[in-house]
Length: 125
Image (tube, rainbow, N blue to C red; front, side):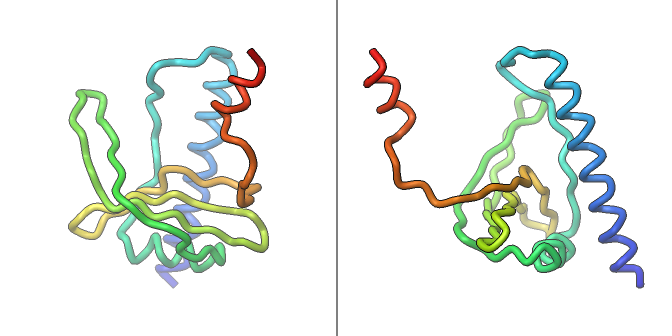
């Protein structure tokens, strides 16, 4: 029961933080150099349970780096989970010691095989 309560609380907090961040950014209507973001973090096992609940499977992985407000950098294992049927996805960054953060959830994931964005800009010139 604790796991279900933990999962529900995590999901609620995540969407609350995402909504507040989206509203604040859209009101600015500017492209900042840096955005201070709050991201939900949890023990890695709990994060994997969330990915299973969302029926997202690991699609690719690598290393990722984020910076703190004081310019301290943190590098961890980056994993991208995707539900290829619904198009939902999540980018998770995990650190040693068993902690993971949901850096970016999203939807409308589709494979891309067109021109690169920078190629399109060159053609417009």
